[in-house]
Length: 118
Image (cartoon, rainbow, N blue to C red):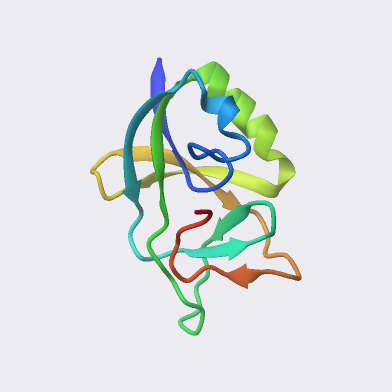
């Protein structure tokens, strides 16, 4: 059984942890609706859902990959206790697994563009 995962940080092509997805099938680049906030945590970003109109929301830009259950299980371990996986719909019209930060850290910068990296 295959499924789709949406990655927006270090798992993207040409980023430090893309090796984890080296055997996954790239589907497309896409983005979420303008309803999340991307935080720069230094070596990687995190996305949060904040119900506060004073906090800027953006479309989160990333890549969609087709993966199997073994890769999903590995990603859950890789993301560890910091992230929780949720199903979301994205602009290209498919539902994907996406990882959200469990808690907002003390220090961060908001990435208003929703694009991390390059």
